[in-house]
Length: 390
Picture 1: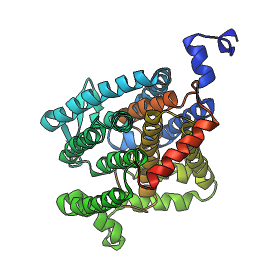
Picture 2 (picture 1 turned 135 degrees about the horizontal axis):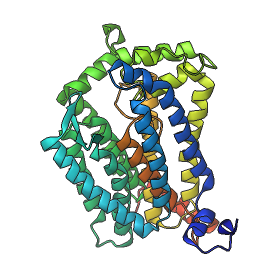
Picture 3 (picture 1 turned 180 degrees about the vertical axis):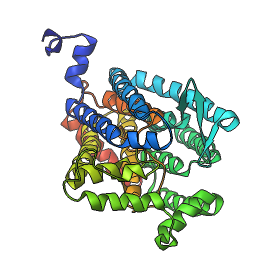
Picture 4 (picture 1 turned 60 degrees about the vertical axis):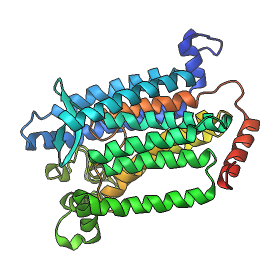
């Protein structure tokens, strides 16, 4: 095809030969697996709560193709365009979060959603990728210009976002945003003594959340004392993994989806374990790991500090969300309502992840100047950051 020739200077032609097609294929494969698992898990949930059998299927089959299109469109952009998109997303998300505090719908004790035109929108989902890019921009500018208060501005923005999230409350997402901020700050040259202080503050924040939010206290207590008879969904999820064994009970043969309230969302990984078995779960996990590791290996060839920090933040968000969801399903951590990227049902989460992965693909595209010499300089910068920064 002429449009795919290396000499093609069109927008799509340049994109095709500069984007990481392996990483793009892995993300599309994850979304395809998500579509299959939605077909397996959501009909039983819909029937149980009195909805049409394919209510969630129809919606997710709209969200997934739209999200893939959004991801590709965003990946066509330049780093400057990515910054502009991030600023726009952040402004709209913060306005939306403020609106949820006034007119939002309370679900399971949290006010995170706005209902409009028959859909529920969670504005905070779009704030995660936007914050990763904006914080990277501020940290990078501060590194290049010592007179620019980028570190203070990034920290101030993080504090504002954390306050808004805790007012909903959403402790889990606050922890993810804190991880993004902390990793980017460290890579930008945060002194080691401040890294230790941040770790202490983070642990203190967990303790504070335990005593400040009753739902957090309840989840941790149930995790530490499983004999209390609570933690119903986690116990059913573990049972599903045991029933699935190595190769699973077969498509449609699972039973956990009939009793798990969140079988199509937070606990869809348990449905995968029961119906398709351990091998399928490991394949899905390998795809997630491939995206994260491939992204880091790609960006380490980059000499642009902004791109390095932004991609690191976006991958930390993506990888941490995977870890939290799967660890919750396996009872390795207290359960947290966090979706499995591109697999769990959820419009806001799926679309926001598409924006974030589109940004990551755009910032890891090959550009003039990327090469091994730049990779060496990047490793030097990381070594300097780990040793105490500038």
